[in-house]
Image (cartoon, rainbow, N blue to C red; front, side, top):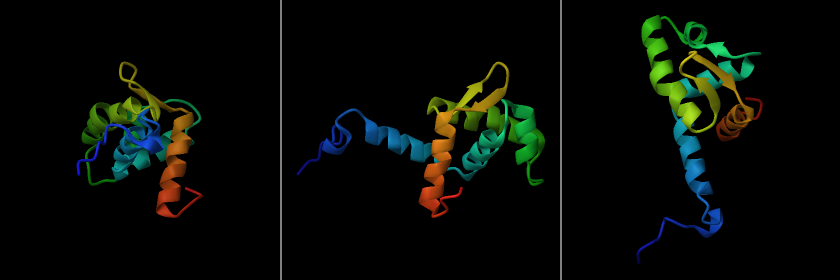
Length: 114
């Protein structure tokens, strides 16, 4: 029996399950969860340079952290609508979905306060 995965009764055929899968894909990387925590805690937009300094843990050089933020993690989070990333200004800020994504991470990890 062949199963048609293109449309599901549970997602109404509108791709909701696909969006959930994309969200989990975006949040699967621990670095992205740390990024979201920092961005969500910021009062204003964070410059990539500032965020890189906050995330560097001594095992990576700052330029490598900055490059992975600017070219990998922030574009992916922006693509899924979890943050707003301005690649020209090299700045990122939270959007309503940032807090919701962190809430989902907390629920999945068993830590509702996360």
